[in-house]
Length: 210
Image: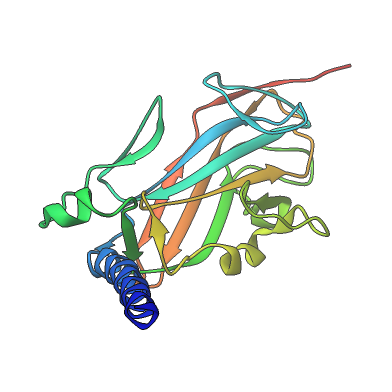
């Protein structure tokens, strides 16, 4: 009797393990490949402890910052955050898997930023200001070096697997104070397939605090 009970227990454990493994593999089997179609820059208020998204085009001269979003055209932003509108061919992927999985067909290989207005007497309009920005990912913990140069961000993005939304996000912060009353920037994001995505910020008003 004891041997029979042990056998049943072993069979039950094997069944559970096979079910879990099968579910995990099946979910990954429905991974959807996607392309990056656009880049967008969103204004960040960096005057507080943490950067916060804002809708207004007014910045404090020493706190100019943006959220950069590289995304697929099927991604939109609503009150719940970034949501994807990919459709899966199998109902199993949506009913049995708690997450959706995505893989990018290309990676981000180069990021450049240009200013359209003078920042100060040394950084003039139409200058490349990539090195004047630092960046970080808000879900990337790096206590020894919270802000890193843009040319070091590539190892922290380009994920092999994106969960739930096909979006790459990071924040950029201008190191220099803007002495002009207006500002505007263009970002260029080059993909491995040589495609270059661009976005231009709105015309920004700069507040100079005493």
